[in-house]
Image (tube, rainbow, N blue to C red; front, side, top):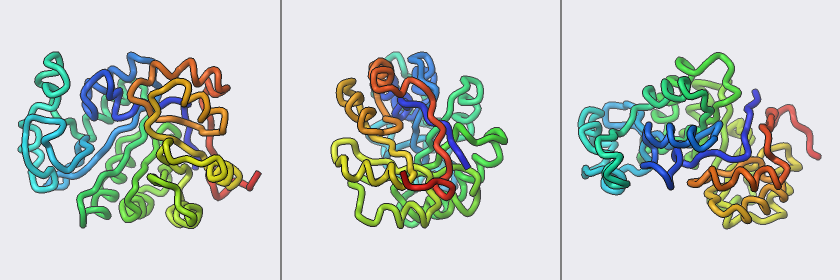
Length: 264
């Protein structure tokens, strides 16, 4: 198992320039020079995977209610672009399948973050992983599944073990390595504001790649790259390209399977 990571990944598409988790956002990320995007996926009541961060519609659509209690048809009735800017009026919540078709057209890699409603962790991981396994090209080097939710990651591992996985933390715990290894994860994702150099060094020595979220300041990005962070998620990915070059990471980095890595 391996995945190819760019230094800068568009966060929720390109969240500062287009409504998050929409097809418009994916297109904007490509136009800004991204080779990878990150987006969130959760299930509707009829177990259809859609791109949405929250389990409620209010923040990013003109609708109301819990996504997990609504059918796909009900979710799709709502506008997902007007809240951001009138130029995006009419944008709909995309299905994962629609997003994957667009990624293929644009040549974008993806970090698919699993967002499961309580009690739906396993089914979310299974449904999303199965769809990715069916529709993504045979070589999954430009695909990564990640989540804070361990049950979702475990289900994704069981259904599509060949697709790389990453575990997310707000603050990296002392037993991070046990958790990552138990889920067969390749990458560790952490809040850049809570990162400590000692933890970063420990992760690197163990052979894992560290990805940091959400980084919008170029100077902060340079510091993170200099400390060995492999990739950063950004709402303004175009502003970080120079930081990536200065940090010596203006290239794609191949991260090998942890099981094959040796501590450095």
